Length: 527
Ligand code: ADP
Image (cartoon, protein in one colour):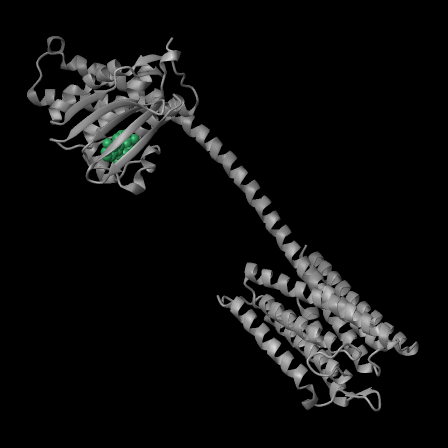
């Protein structure tokens, strides 16, 4: 397998290199043809052609700069920032070059071939060195927060240099020998330098082990750049075929550069999309497994609870039978105390199992509500009445304030379960001497039944979690207050089944208010 993929990689690599070589050969052959069919275009025509070609290349250079900038913003890689700055400066220098061309109206200083050539070679130097630096930077990260400022300052500096050269070009060494109609050795030498830098870039890209499709266009852009510079070492008139070909190669080179960037961006989008699709299918698989596990858990809860309830009922019944001294004979005080403990704990466990059973029924969708109109005033007094003794024993006051004519459509048993749980908790978490108040009122056509206490309160971070199954605020609370952590889960689910909810306000150390909100039966709807 590994050998096969290695061979496939080699093949790809060979095709990549031969593609680039073929491109270079084609460009160089065209250069030869330009020499073979040497021609000079009339000045009036060429100046127009030149400005059109230059402006096209400037527009593409700006697009490359912008695209690289966005890539930098997205990926934070140094090479993109370098490329963005390079092409911004190249655009600037080429703009000055196109306006300085011999035959164009004077731009800042008198236009000559020397002036246009100086600005041309400046642009090519920036272009070749900038691209090489960006190729060498690879995928190195650049975390500067001042990237925008760097780009702006390089544009300002570039603008000043371009202005300086344009205004004082006659002080610079000559690039064109107008008398002999040839380029000076300095100009040709600089062109060779640019060719060398671009060729080094091509070699680096070709030597890359893992080549992407964008690398092919990057190498092609560099090769077109080389061909362009070769043409510029050969021209003798600013209007000849070499000059025309050189400008065309420059546009091709910039076009390849843009294509490389677009390819990279599009490949990035596809890669991100593929990754997303993979993650999404992984998530749905996890979801399926979770649902399965949830189903197994619900079944387990329902079955286990059934299995526990029966022997527990037997324990309670037989404990009560033993405690009936008329039938079983006299018990010592210690025996009676122990039996009382057994009965109390068994009944408590029985209650918890009942809660779990109910919850597993709700989670499994097996609980059906038997709803009927319920007058709240009377109903709440009934529920509170059943707990009055426990409140009195603990020394917590229980008060009631209920609007007279509130009516909801509810399952009496389940509604009583919700409110009993809220009241039980209020009592459990309120110390002796505290107070609990039940209030029922109508708000925005909803019945709001609140149970407020002056107890321990609940920390803000835990207010949502306490509605989760088996959640208790802390382990110590379980030991101190008892409980299983399912009461509120059950209450919240039952409230939802009634089309309502439970809201919570609380202040740590000062108390809590749980409000059961239910849809109200408004008078017109009364059955
Ligand atoms: P438990 O059986 O533990 O009472 P619940 O689901 O009814 O289970 O409550 C979950 C947790 O929410 C409790 O353990 C407690 O930490 C917190 N809690 C519930 N009601 C109150 C309240 N009135 N005051 C303070 N904390 C409360």
